[in-house]
Image (cartoon, rainbow over all chains, first blue to last red; front, side, top):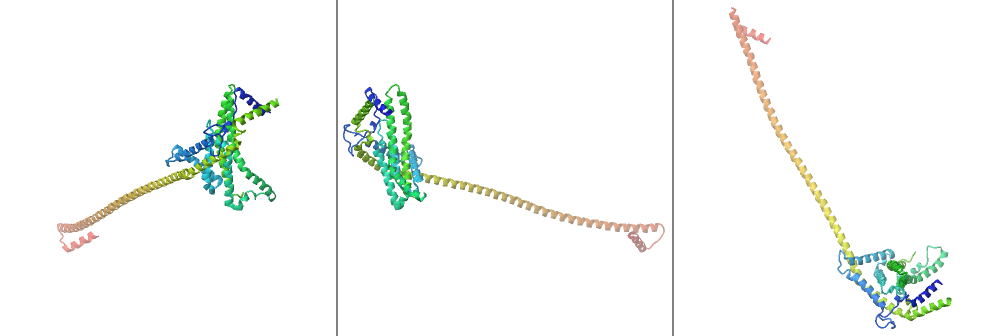
Length: 259
Length: 183
């Protein structure tokens, strides 16, 4: 009832100049041409633009930043090296030493999500990782890779992941069903965790931005936006990190399926 | 009131649908193909840039830096060892020099001692010779003195006898005097 009333107020507000369009920032629209043009798979859209900016930022940091190959690194090279070392250590520690050959894949995922999250925090930008289509592809890629790697490396023994040999025999079939369900829920939680976090944060900021138009509560709204923005800066990094470390955990399961 | 609210929601939803299609843009399936296509393009570019250029380069730089640090540490260790060796050599040279000096001093002392001993022996011998000579001379003098005293005693006795008017045989007198002196 409360929510409905709020929606009603919003609806009334539209007449009085208070406009809430917290989800409009997520609309995929063609970069060139009319607003109502159809979006084909090849259309250059705001998605293309912000993903391209992420790619450019990554290339700038890792390729141009390290072009000097300096023994004593410059600042940019140092940042690249820290991210490299951080990710490498995470893969090695969480997924195991034999997972190091997957390091470029994990680095690709981590850097894309990290840069997309932070670029999405720029005002007027488009957060590509707030879309379930994007995060679902990322999560499904991880899920499929991990499953295929698990079967290729361990064969049928990979199914041991679902057969908890340390549990009492009577409980094992039940646990196997639970493990199987949790295994297939992984890509869902993996993708919705990232997409949901980013979307929710951006939507909340937009709602407070709408309140800022009302003089009486505008100071409160601006302070709130500032606070939430700070939180979102944290969330952007943490969610990229969580996505990556979960990828490492799943990869560890695939390489060492025995409990 | 309830119906009014419902109507409001319906209106809002309708307005949103008109503006952006239907509800959440996230669920606008017609844009999924576009997003997935560009995502795959972006990921492939990032993957190739990272795996072909950036990551090997950074790995190389890190390895090179590690190598440089290791080499520098080894060089420092070597220099330290050299310093220790030099100190050892210096100490050894010092000890040698000290030993040499001690040896020279001891040699000099021994030489002086031997010279001294020789000189002393020589002096002792000379002194002994002189003493023997002197003793000889003294004994000669002493013998001479005894003889003289005997002579004087004999002469004196003869004279006394003569003065008293006795004539005595010289040989008898001598024998008597010699007897007296001996006794």
